[in-house]
Length: 494
Ligand SMILES: Cc1cc2nc3c(=O)[nH]c(=O)nc-3n(C[C@H](O)[C@H](O)[C@H](O)COP(=O)(O)OP(=O)(O)OC[C@H]3O[C@@H](n4cnc5c(N)ncnc54)[C@H](O)[C@@H]3O)c2cc1C
Image 1 (spheres, protein in one colour):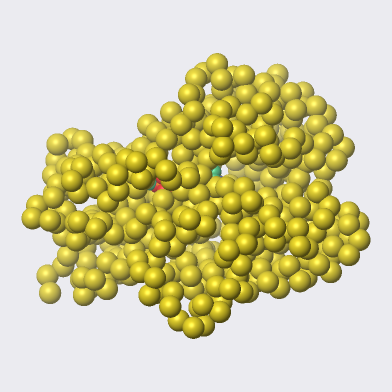
Image 2: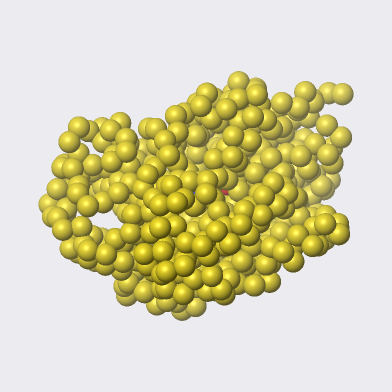
């Protein structure tokens, strides 16, 4: 059999994963095209005078998913980066002098809960037993399904599993069955925010995220999250993937119902036998294809619940910071009005919650000696008008709180500052509505209800990444690449 030339678009986690899984098939040759001049997509990094900033993800959860990924190629994460388990895993800040350091040790975690709500430690055991089951079935079975037909879910065991996994109950109700103190509820509801919606609208299946958080731990790759991307690029190249940077795709030309010519912005055309698009799904569907080949209408896309966008600040601080941890969740304002500003009545929130990461507390290589690397994130509704004035206003709004609560002057010590928001997500990644984390994992956007991983009209065009199955986040994106690669091989007898 002559080799099939697979063109993968986008060097995010999903594109790299798909490309590498396909490259080890002897019947494939793989070219990966990336519009930017560096790999990683949302997980790129940049450096400035000794500060090394991860541009997107900072939480390393579900270490088993990364192990599985590298094991598929006879490798392990330690071949590429060194992991540290963070302890405390993170800090939750409810107000001035009201911080919870979340211990990595389970017994200490339970003791902490008992101090807040007597009996909550024992309830955590019950809560986690269910969450563990969901994690095992969810991460080792459900997420690996291409979700192209209901028949994939039609085994009696799986039907029983689905009932046990609380698909139809909300996470918010589920948490309240076990805990009643507001602090614990907020702590337990926090992990599903990664899935792009609030606990009211996320199925209780996703308490599996609590298992990931509490039982499997929060980890950090030394030198930063981008080290994962470096490892994946090195592995992809070792397996023969030809990666081309600054190679923006402008059109996927369809010839006799097949994606054949990939036209780059430079005008160059690349022949393809099979195309796997790991760029934002909406961009591929609506901007790279002749409209008659789009999988979905603009009205369909408009009705999707997108995960939030974000306003980010990358800051270089010329002193060490106190009273902060590697990960800090500022829950010093109620979530309700902020969630309303993201999902129901999109607007800039009046009193946003925010997240501050100081990786230099763990890792001296990401800031010059005696200095600190500070990353701030405010989740925002997608598609908001994003101006320099707004960014500045929100910088001061959260700095006021950060300085007051952590009890120190920070602004006058900022020696480097870069902001990043909707317009950057759009121009850097062609992100639909400037989204940061793709499509929310609501019940109506789960499994076969997500944008499908194959084009319905073009038989050799597939999609991968955080807008299709299984969903947003680094581990799901890695899995998405594997799932699509398996479909490509199966359908093309490779
Ligand atoms: C600020 C932020 C914080 C996050 N925090 C976490 C976290 O802590 N933990 C976690 O697990 N997840 C986190 N996430 C989510 C996670 O980063 C994403 O889900 C994941 O990186 C998405 O990978 P992807 O491959 O689907 O998409 P992307 O990373 O966006 O990759 C798509 C690639 O396609 C390229 N591309 C687009 N158009 C074209 C074109 N026309 N031609 C060629 N190339 C093109 C883009 O440049 C990009 O490189 C975070 C995301 C953001 C933005």
